Length: 142
Image 1 (cartoon, rainbow, N blue to C red):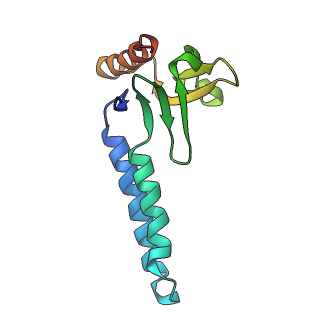
Image 2: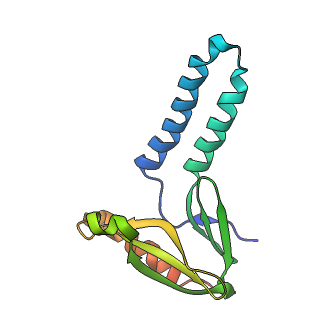
């Protein structure tokens, strides 16, 4: 059995996002403290969302590719994956000209991954994007 490894390394933005979820839950808990609402009912969903956000991303293993988002996870085996393409980021592409990696399964509709890159990205960001593309294009398909 192989381990799932992230296509892109952790960034400060991911850590900051997870911390923001936790901080918002904590603020809401303090605001509801006088209303006698159990604090666990407020903090538990915030903690779960913070954990999911910190672990979101694209992961690969010998078995396939997994796209993990805050509220959903989708896993494809390598034999189910038809292609990996770069496309504009929908309506936001008109403003930012970002490209997004899309996974195209053999059956079903293509879906985007959280891996994005701007044409004006720094060389370090561009290298990370290119490494992610290379990992998804040349997997050890079993």
